[in-house]
Amino acid sequence: TSGLILLAKNEQALKELESQFAQGKVAKEYLCLVVGHLSRSEGKIDLPLPGRDGSLVKAVTRYRVLRRFAATTLVRVSIETGRLHQIRLHFARLGYPVVMDDQHGDFAFNKRFRREYGLKRQFLHAVKLSVSFAGRRRTWTASLPDDLQKTLAQLEAVRQ
Image (cartoon, rainbow, N blue to C red):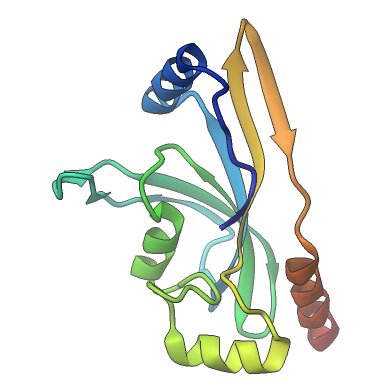
């Protein structure tokens, strides 16, 4: 995954951020390209995932389709919970793995996609992060990196 990450500069800030993450007060949005065409233009994935101790824990992912290409779909994703590999696992379990995901993906598709488009990593990018700190809501955004922009341009060219 590329894009925004949040770092605490001191222990007090870390504790505050951990508390906000635990309470679901940190808003995170991603862009990802998935294999196939989602049947709905937006939706909610509410599937428990394994927690750190192996027991199942609540995991909720919301998505909105932005663009459909020949064999893939670009989606904007927000997560209500922050589980390890949450987006990748949720879409893979629905049968729409993230493009170029080397753990939970469609390996045959990824091989063809890499050969055709030259993408060498998963198409999952953190584009927006919002958190409250010191009484203010702060939001950061990150543009898609060049390799992901290039991939979208190639997909768009094939689409037309």
